[in-house]
Length: 321
Image (cartoon, rainbow, N blue to C red; front, side, top):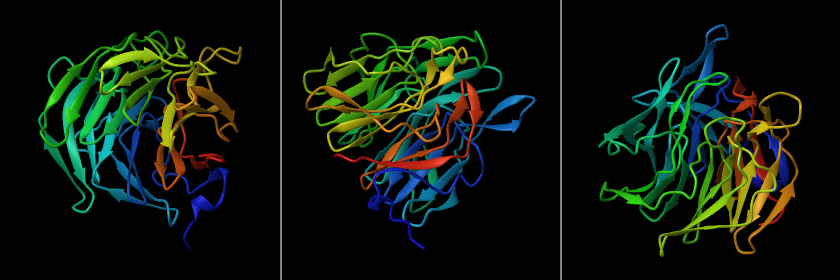
């Protein structure tokens, strides 16, 4: 039976990720399908995380899962965007005890179920966990990190790099740097503005509430109303002229050094104003969000600071557009 996610407002629980728990992945939507790309899984709880190249597809109409062709290179924190019915992956992180940035880039054609290698990212701008946004044929990347050593006190090399990639010409362009370095940050393009929301700087607990806005015409950064709740590992998606932000980690409330947020907050890009909304049913970080027909889908994520991936798959339908 088809699932009509658009018929209800607020939160709804959907079929869990078929392969099991996943976090630090990315998502992209093509038509009615949500693609869950890469990330980390717990292959052996005694030995920590394993980076995966697995790609799974959630059909939003039928509430079902299927497999797609895996990534040619396993990655976590991949930088992903959908443009004109194709999915572009532009670098990410991978490795064992230390995750390092990769320059590898690919494009996925859903009809052929095939990943094709693109020229690598220019040396020096490779990173994972960047804010991403799309306008026209260009994919924008802001911030990210070149190194992440999982575990307490592990190296986290945050950058302020901003760049764009034209999917038609295949050309990269260097853009003015972020006002401050950010990783595990939210990103979205609304109109002619690329927004970079929240995130952190060199560590899970170093969370930020900043909202940076990059005018794609004037090529200048400005600062907007801050997020009500500073957090990193946040997921973002756009409905209309509002940017919705979900979850995150780095909560300082006495429950642990790096607790997880349930906060759902919406930013009105027209009025430069924030609004608090109903919290996530399952607080998570390291998830990702994408909008399909006005409903925001959030598969996977971690329920504890730094880890504990889950197979939770839920959706949020805004009450106001």
